Length: 278
Image (tube, rainbow, N blue to C red; front, side, top):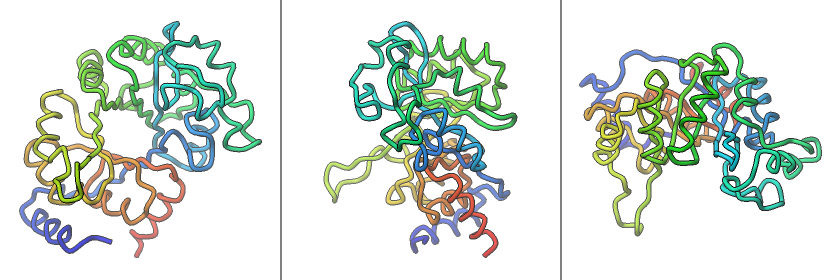
């Protein structure tokens, strides 16, 4: 439910024309695939996301010791494989010898850490692949090579990263592919302001020369006023993560989010459709 302050600012900026006046459908993006129902960052999770009607999938990518781009969230494999290998120090063969599905359920036993090539192979025509870079700029060349060889159209790809050097390099080297800088928000104490501020976020996006922002869906920070300030400073495009609450999804959809990243793509789409009808 929108707070009174959010409603006030939403109304003000609609009247002033600061918010988009045309409504477009948001892309429902499956976070690490349909990760509520299947083991994250596996082919099973990505294939299930497509079955659930997701518009896109988001995956996390590291570079292995032998130069392969692999899909896993953590620096090490312990949480999802039970056996602890450092991804950057391991070879593809060593990593793909691990089982990263069984922890989620016996039906997923045998799932392997996929490569970027294998993930791309699941992407249907017209659907999006959101590539989160978990390494520094050294991963850009290998990612670029895989994308070029795959034939996946540039407009079906968005590259995202918290790493400022990596995302700036990705945009410089692949100017035709959309790039979003990622940020979360922190405060030192409960009475302190949340950082980064809207001004700091806008300045970072401009300095990195990227297309937009991937923002944590923290409603205490990312209000209508916060987003309007970003637009005022030239940040026109944003996506939001990770949103599993339908009311939060409705709020960000109303604010014009490019995409809504969720662990529950099927549920969020159903709830948004229901709220639209109501």
